[in-house]
Image 1 (tube, one colour):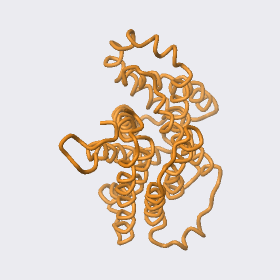
Image 2 (tube, helix red, strand yellow):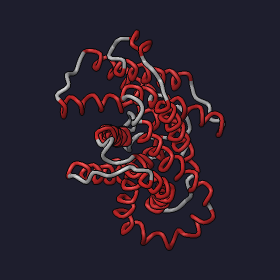
Image 3 (cartoon, rainbow, N blue to C red):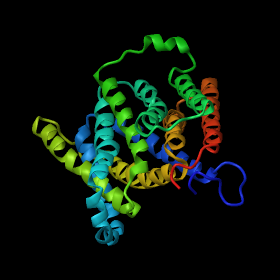
Image 4 (cartoon, one colour):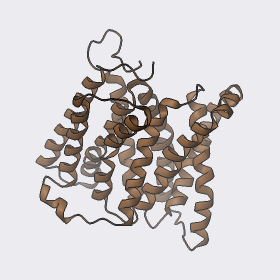
Length: 310
């Protein structure tokens, strides 16, 4: 699609946006699962299990293409390594580790900075210029996130405290923004081959970290819940979501795709209401309106620019 509307549809390219909404729903579930298994699975070990499971499921489908694309991967090993380190290894290790020390509210609030950081990376690294409408759209979505996280009380921001976990989450957001922006440099190989390569990098990084935490007394409590958590994070937030997200970045560009990250706290609230019987309030509706309004404005602004991935 290359950032254009669907054939025969004069409006916005709704299909990649619908795909991204599904991705954010999966990642919201990953956030909840990551918090739920604290103490049962050490963070680096959870990340190792996640990427090992995802790679094992992906391997039979990607392997037929590996032979044809191995020279392309070798010639572009630097960008493949960078994508694997930022989007797979570092991001997830920092998220799982940061959730041990910080609150869910802080984590969601800090992740709302990802769209702004994507714009910053695109501007500083690639010289991409954005119209004022695009910048306003990002800010509007971030306001919507703040309304939900702060439960409609702007004064609550004064009561937030930050610690080492917040620094980890902030570093993770920078890694994801870099990954999203750098996807424009992906090598011309089959998408499954690139995904398998980045998963392998994540496994290589997590393996010694997992061994280290287990050697220092961390344990795994094997229960149906922990097994189910590992299966979930390996299949949906990893394998399925990364395939869909990478394709959406190709179709829409980094800025538009990255802005949909602001849907995470909204879906998190909806999942909490559905699974944990938590009540929804008026501030959820106001925050949702701001988030969705920002995404729509961002899409409109994106249509005025030349497609990033022709």
